[in-house]
Amino acid sequence: MVTTSEILSTLKMIDREKLDVRTITMGISLFGCVSDDENRLCEKVYDHITRTAKDLVRVGEDIEREFGVPIVNKRISITPAALISGGIKNPVKLARALDRAAKETGVNFIGGYSALVQKGMTAADRRLMGSIPEALAETNFLCSSVNVGSTRAGIDMDAVRLMGGIIKEAALRTARQDGLGCAKLVVFCNAVEDNPFMAGAFHGPGEGDCAVSVGVSGPGVVKSALENVRGESFDEVAETIKRTAFRITRIGQLVAREASKRLDVPFGIVDLSLAPTPSVGDSVAAILEEMGLECCGTHGTTAALALLNDAVKKGGVMASSHVGGLSGAFIPVSEDVGMIEAAERGALTLDKLEAMTCVCSVGLDMIAVPGDTSAETLSAIIADEAAIGMVNNKTTAVRIIPVPGKKVGDTVEFGGLLGHAPIMPVHPFGSELFIKRGGRIPAPLHSLKN
Image (cartoon, rainbow, N blue to C red):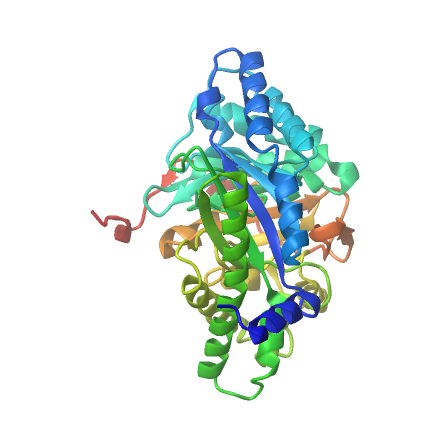
């Protein structure tokens, strides 16, 4: 039974502490659409998506209105496109079809223009990866991802080398929008199959025909809860975060089950990820500073983030039998007002962010760097982050934007949830010879678990 105090508590979280359901994401399998005729493939994909997701936005809006819970985005994820596009020469045609389907259904984004190349690249993988810059430049709703490594397979350094150039080209093709195409492209290690968050969402090959997953976010709720335990020990801090994460996840569970019932689609997972926005009061950095740090990025930040990430997961797991996705704390620079301020003050550097990714969800996210950053340097940044994910058996990722024409000291404005960001410096020393070696970095010994 839901008590009056629980109802009042939830209303406070929504009204004052910026609790929201960040996304309802419908995952759709496209394996049944495979065709050697590229026009027929695109037609079948468009028809299947628009038919399956025709009610997604309406149902999301109905739930939002009836339950009073803000649902920020409605999204679609699909089977990694490289797995269904082997018979076509120009994957951009498929990208256009996906974009049209997203527009027709009214969703905010569609993810899954993706390739899984952790152990090697097929001809279809290479074609799709090579088409990513053009696809992102010509579409409005499409998001793309590439998985270049895993704990079981190691790191495909040939794919890492290619992705540095692809990111560079994507920035140049969207130069008039300050490289916005790169904000819709993420490079993974250990990508998960049920992630509802963009830009990395795809409907994994191990998933069923269709599923509805929900991503919940509530940095402001956690920050508010910690204000009540100032000066208390870390034991009390951890317990407070766990209790708060439980309450947040229950909201996601309610929305997910209701959406599943109304859409007649299986319930996938609830992803409890503290995903910030540029709004004041909705910052992960503010949570870390509430623990006692003068500024996010100073010494102690990694330890504080480790506690936060672990407590969020422990609390969320108790609230739902199907917690999945990435679930933890995101640290995207441009999307978090506290991270932006810390970077502008010089407290938060690329090296410190890399250290923080060892203990948080995902990795280097929405980081703007000088436009003249070389493709090899971008690849080396990806390799470092993939190594963290591979060795620590966790998901890591890079979403980095070499903003054309910008240099350190400048600021770039992306708008909306993507926010704005200072241009962060990269190391001036080259990595060209390292990246040119190619081949594979072998999987770590602890990957042999059979």
